Length: 173
Image (cartoon, rainbow, N blue to C red; front, side):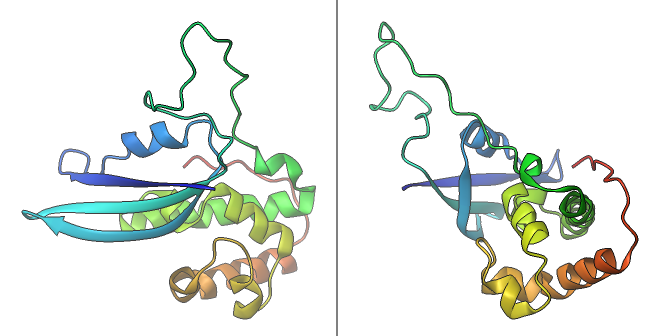
């Protein structure tokens, strides 16, 4: 595992954190958010994000680990599509969780990946935890997320479990 610290500065024009450096880093990587911290420098809000990822991900930004230009480059590792691994019932819950995540992120003024990543939502949809303890046992669900989101997640799971089966509807985030 490798780690990367990314700092995002608040953009008054966007009325949000400029996440371009984050999107560039995540492109082609299967990274997991380990920790985040919000602080201010000179009155400007800054968000620091610490990520872990598999060391075999391709390096970025011309690091020393980049092979020489003349050398053959390996095929880029593509981001895994977690939805493809879900069955139809799990996809319905996954799309419901994505819709909730988009609403919650807008309400909190944060990017959706700060609530839960697609990978974490897929894991929740697959496991369908019924208690906070079961939810906390899943990767990516730490004490802060448990405290902030457990009630809403468990209510969503309960509602989807009680609803008749239907086709999942993709959600724009």
